[in-house]
Image 1 (cartoon, helix red, strand yellow):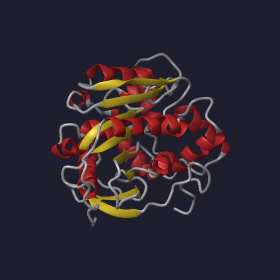
Image 2 (tube, rainbow, N blue to C red):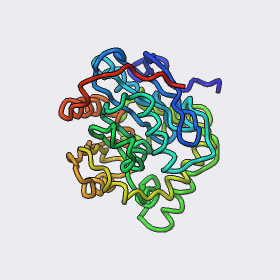
Image 3 (cartoon, rainbow, N blue to C red):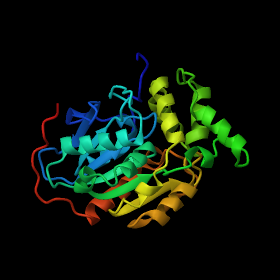
Image 4 (cartoon, rainbow, N blue to C red):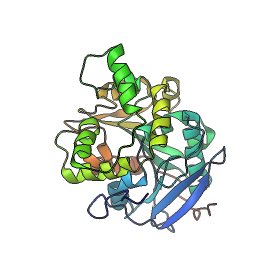
Length: 313
């Protein structure tokens, strides 16, 4: 793709990784992985899983701040960013991919704070009962996500809840139409659907560049998965300490989802509701989200010993 896929300057410009590798998932899917920070020291590990239509560039603000004293691992979900598309699109595939990334980047017995935004949070929930996840998860941060009824609860379409709103939402979010270049109109649409009304122009620009770079076939394929998603049973398997963050103006995963998660999680650390913010909380409230990650890393210690990050494929 010739067009710029992310902003090139400013606080949301992706920093250069210290190391890149490829993790191989259970079905052979290849996942682009970046490691940031002091990879040769015993620094606390953080793993970042981005959401639908995004990429590792989405975490630029968190990576830049945390890499000073953490080892930050970010990866592109299959079909997103620099990870090739795969015919397999399912919550189980997402769980397989997260396990593969943990296996490729963490030493045996080493634990990390695992952070998921939107579909990344659903990835974490899908992997909650997996041995590979449980072996490496010290604590979890779920940002702007939900476990089920994603289309039915969405408020992107401004009308009363019901079958018509659900039908319209499904067809809007699952559209096969190309998003095209990032224009003023495109930025306005993306801001309305995914961000709070007070979001600064540079935040909107960063998100627009990332979202518009997602191939339309990938966007459509994963929209079908999200439409049918039901991970309510997996939430109860997420037994590690888990914090939840949501914006009160989130139209894609409104606060009702965060409250449902809090009620179902075995070890919920509470819900932080951010007034006036939308779905893109790591971009809209970078300091708060980064602070939550730091707090989890300090409160829930990881393995004291560190083995050099394993060589990837």
